Length: 503
Ligand code: AMP
Ligand code: MG
Image (cartoon, rainbow, N blue to C red; front, top):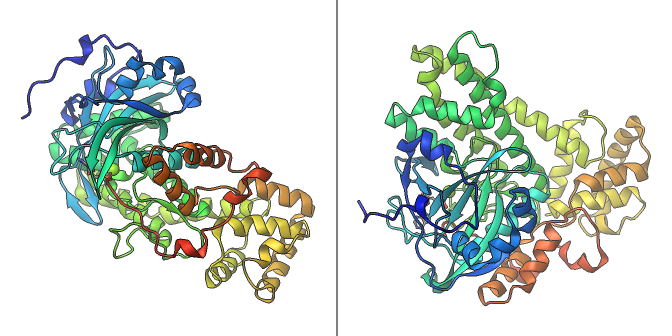
């Protein structure tokens, strides 16, 4: 393999203290000890001070030369055992037996202020044994994109990896031209993916320790259950992941979020959103919306996301069969019964979310009411985010916003049915409108604005990015000076906006 690397555990950089390495220690078969590439001229572009505080990391220290050294991957934290993680994955339906961290490193784990163990991970930190043909690097635009969108998703209350920092490395990286290199530091409940299990099951012995590790870390309540058979625990584990992912994908669907690359290596065991390459938020509602330049068949189109997630969970189930029952047919029957509950779980999360979005108390929304609204929105290309705010305005007697989205004569019969439902539930109009505004965001990362901010940042002008970040991390707080951030892209932006993977 490659040249021997220095032992970081004897290093002197203490800017990030207290890193543990339970994953590397307990599951060494799934890791390769590794170190980042030297960044010639590292500059901190953005630091998430609030997140740093929850990790008990000192912001001033992170901003220091030593701090930036760690966040750029140039130096390893003293006492840490950074590793590249191995995983496999189904990409657009095809199996890749070995992917792994081709441009990323797990620095280690920290205890956050809630007492949870979280991963500290770098992306763009140079080549690893898993790089295949890739250069191991990342560039400023896409790393700031992940930073901003993951923080927006977090602010919307959706489980996600978080962004701690982006450092420009001072090195040019060849992409569509030469672009400034960058390293993102992100924090996650863990980086265990369906793809980690797909890799482990083919290695044999490491599968059960991996499953036990995942259970202890993400579903510890299952370790205390009085299980008759050990295998019940793994079935319960599968069920817990099905539930977490059904809930997650429902939240994406309620928010108009298109993940864009729902490969099994980008599907977490924790139920967090991960990997913000080609994602985008809808402007006009269209179930067939696809933004990723490589998703030619629309496999990961907005409306296909629940089905794509269920498919990924079937691949996950396949990895657990031998832990669940020694008789293959019995194991398949057991996981299938659990997988079959996905649709019901998804529907129930979606219905509860839609009830809240439409101001209907409880979870009693009539699905036809939702479906008919969606049909109208699709027919008129109504802005997803704007429509739910416009409906609340409508209740306040302000019809201008809704009139801008669809013809009154088309929506009026639906509005009458909706008002009828609200009356049945007995809340006042103003109270309902306020409750709706608390769950329907006003500000999301609009593609045209994010695109403009990232272009400016790539050219060294960070102010538009910082402003947009401030806005989308306060998605529900209306401010007059932020009115430009509520509108969909102007016609001049076109309708063929594309996003890109692995950049
Ligand atoms: P992603 O599409 O970002 O989920 O990445 C899929 C796989 O490609 C992972 O194994 C990544 O580590 C790898 N990869 C993506 N970009 C690069 C790159 N520039 N250099 C090396 N590996 C990469
Ligand atoms: Mg990935």
